[in-house]
Image 1 (cartoon, helix red, strand yellow):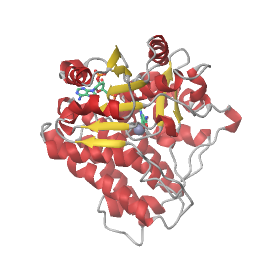
Image 2 (cartoon, protein in one colour; image 1 turned 180 degrees about the horizontal axis):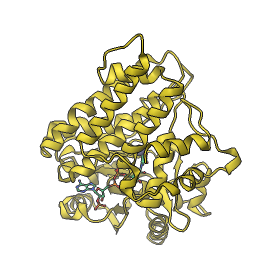
Image 3 (cartoon, protein in one colour; image 1 turned 90 degrees about the vertical axis):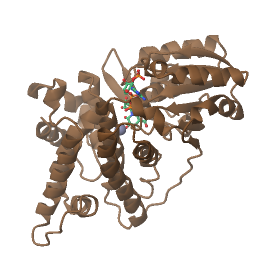
Length: 391
Ligand code: NZQ
Ligand code: ZN
């Protein structure tokens, strides 16, 4: 196990009706003038926004509203939010929605107290200061409610990039599983896929002797495998929703990642599908991650075999462990198909001739420096080969 530090001080208010705590929690964490930030309207339709507004008013808090954070949130909305925060002397940003609204809120929170262009943070500059961010989550997926990250797309260049900093970790997150019952099945399934891949990016590591972290990862994966079909079958299954919602947090606040190297190739490759074709993040991962597993299992099968046996309950074939690995990947793919996820990047509109462009566009490093991954080191040709497997 490698040395690590871990400090994840988000306060979680979990359960039915907890959205009514929005006002008291903002107050407790020092907010007086709030930017209330949300997405395209699901929070209005469900009545959640009204509840949150009532709670803020009851607590005597002033607020300004900014809706319109789109899935795969964009820089123009962040600039708008930064301007609004400065004009209105906002001191707390409250996101109501999914990863997109939360990430947009985080970028606004960082940009509002920074003299330069907020995009600097998405080109490698560390985030040292930000307004505090609170969250009311409506979809179990990105894990942004407990993470230090924000992912934003710069529209003019199609760059979908991430940034990170401890100051971006939400100070509180309200998690009411019932709020996720209005999700369309595709978004529920994409969210579960994202949760699984957050774990997989951390599970596939060459660092030895991280049994506790491996076992935590396997518990999260097995929970998603059990609970997702239950909510696809019955969207109102609160208990299954609750398990998935907490799994989404546990998967991405890095509890499942500490003490070892991580990978993150599938995410890098998927972000190009979101940037160029507008793919839903989790749906893109449903295609990329199995393709990546197939590719790396040829070069470094060990952990893929463990994944097959421990997560997918495959029988160990001691003579031909590669067959065990292949069966595990197949079971993963079958699961993804069963919950309604796509199986080819064609389904997003990708063409085979786009593949070199996609591979070259990943990350912001120069072409000669491109190397990716941790579990298996990949060059540009390997990344293209994985996109081809996903095609
Ligand atoms: O915009 P609204 O109207 O709210 O609709 C959303 C959106 O269309 C809808 N939705 C959300 N909750 C709902 C609902 N519809 C009905 N009922 C509800 N309860 O679902 C759609 C997707 O929402 P979005 O916020 O985009 O989903 P998600 O949480 O999957 O976030 C995706 C974004 O997070 C980034 C992704 O790249 C993507 O941009 N990620 C952020 C991470 C982080 N900050 O740590 C890590 C992740 O790996 C990921 O990259
Ligand atoms: Zn993700």
